[in-house]
Amino acid sequence: MQEPRVKSHVLEDDFTELVVPRFLRYVKIWTTSDRHMEETPSSPGQWELARLLVKELEGFGLKADLTDHCYVIARLDASPGFEGKPVIGFLAHLDTAQDVSGRNVKPVLVENYDGKKIVLSPAGSTDQADVVCLDPETDPGLAAHKGKALIHTDGTTLLGADDKAGIAEIMGAAEYLLSNPEIKHGPVEIIFSPDEETGKGLPSFPLDKLAAKVCYTLDGGALGELEAECFNAWSAKVRFSGRVIHLGQARGTLANACLMAASFAVMLPRSESPEATDGYYGYYCPTEINGGLENAELEVYIRDFDLSRGKERVEALDTFAAAVEAQFPGGSVTVEAQPQYYNIKEKIDGNPEVLARLEEAARRTGIAFTLKPIRGGTDGSKLTEMGIPTPNIFTGGRNFHSVTEWVSVEDMAAACRLVVELVKVWAS
Image 1 (spheres, rainbow, N blue to C red):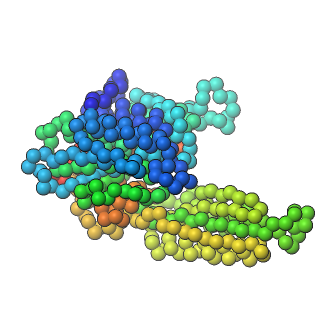
Image 2: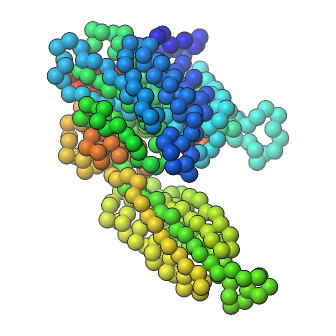
């Protein structure tokens, strides 16, 4: 199936032409996931995108499976004579984060960015508080794109480059390989997963359907960023039980669960929060709080690159809980922490060829790459834990999970080109 082409001078090479039209279509599908839902996938829009991808893959002539839990798995057979080469996989996720609306996304393609501030607010808006801008003064990546093409939001939703850019790049690479049979390659598997943004960690993943022994996620940021380490992550549910009585008779008796939750939240060190840390520093982050006088609940994310330090943070929650109970006689606090994913570094270090071949592919394509830690995780984190080492590759997206999200067209094409080159490297 040939992808409909956008009439634009931006589509100046094969890889741009393969990626941009797909991306513009994918982001319009509402795939926001819901971390409060137990079932997988957690939203119906992910099925819509998954079925579209299956249709496209089958249009290429590939067999694509869609599992009962919305995983898409397809395979490019090896070139004749290359069947014995290692099977490699490429993975991206279907959902977008619920932090900002992902409904009715209206992507804006800028063919030749003039280097000036881009006002995203609706036309005619007079309330300065509503003005949303992309400003090169505060965004060096944007400033560096003067004269280049980019795609941004209209200021009312996220864009969805996380991770529909990754999907478009993998799909574009698949079409390129199939359209150029002179490129010799081993077996290649394509995997699209639901609910990555919920932190569930590949529930009901059909591992038995994969033959790949190594995989690569396309779920990163700027051009050249390659990632082979990530956070260790936990999610903690902290529950507060109060003691309730009529407020007019509350003195010496009331234990306000709502206030208990607030007191716990402010005990989390502000110097160890996402907004106060970068690099290899971990953090605590309260992500949701709700409740009333009798019962309240607080969700806390804990992140750290060092496993032992992360466990110390988890243990510290019990100390905070005891302190709150001491402040509110008659009230009680329980902490239930669950691991979400673990750092991929150790297992990738134990399989150095996985990263070495990625770096070689980057060199061959002329991409100046840097290794950096992921201040987060990908589905590759869980896949690595399952025994398939999975580093992460840039997609070109910036300002993920926000109304100022944008993506570089040039970087998207480069990521697609890198996937093709990586396939060739593994076949060499």
